[in-house]
Length: 219
Image 1 (cartoon, rainbow, N blue to C red):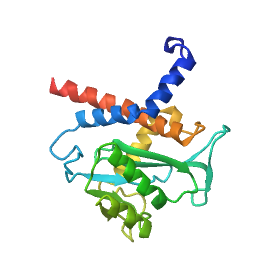
Image 2 (tube, rainbow, N blue to C red):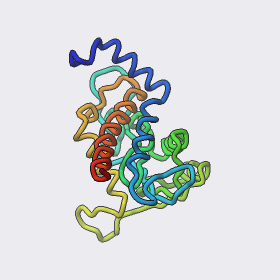
Image 3 (cartoon, rainbow, N blue to C red):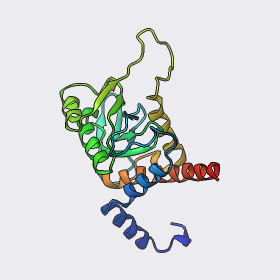
Image 4 (cartoon, rainbow, N blue to C red):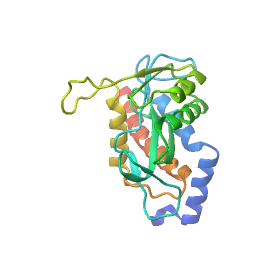
């Protein structure tokens, strides 16, 4: 801990307090609304028709460190650790996050993620997802929030990497957060709540930079 941060016990106390009362999510929500540019860029309770993206990125089955804490084994990605599930706006900023053991299926986490987005004040109409988000659980989660789920898949004859419209932004979100926050390159947290805080704090840093750019161009 840098000396100018003060005693680590004080920092930890405020960190946990902000987690308990939802301060991290509140800060991110306020900054996200401030960073909105254009008519449809800001999802709100008025249910604007901006598209949101939900996807568990290919590389976000995250290996856990040696610390204590829940973890699981993802057979598809051959990863022992956690999964980061993220809902973003069409600009790629995080609206809600959820951390589970790596063996939890993406559709099992989707409903909880939608619930969190609603508690954070976001009410999208459409969500664009990849092909894994299908089935009865996904339909039930979408119906609970009146969501139009739009599945985007690659063309059958597509070769090599080909970014899909809008959906590539979730990949960019994970990449940006991981590259700019070393804390996210590996799971070093003992609880899912602390791991979610790490995502929220990294997202706040990103939003602050975006807000600064917005103010610079306005002035």
